[in-house]
Image (cartoon, rainbow, N blue to C red):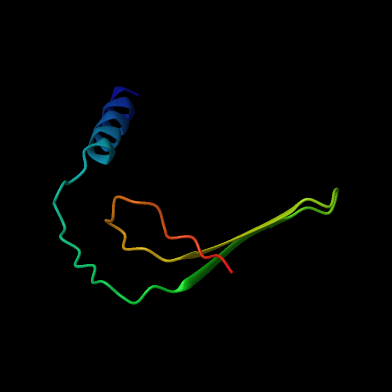
Length: 68
């Protein structure tokens, strides 16, 4: 019985210990594309559609909105 408990504790301890390694991901800039985000509700006539341009992932500003 004690061997099962110790074995279980060792397995849990090994599972909780994770390897940490920094991975550098090279994200290049690409041309912005049109993004459509919408919400359609069948209960009421409230519908929302937002058009914006895609933005660079590491940019510290919101995506640029598109207006007609």
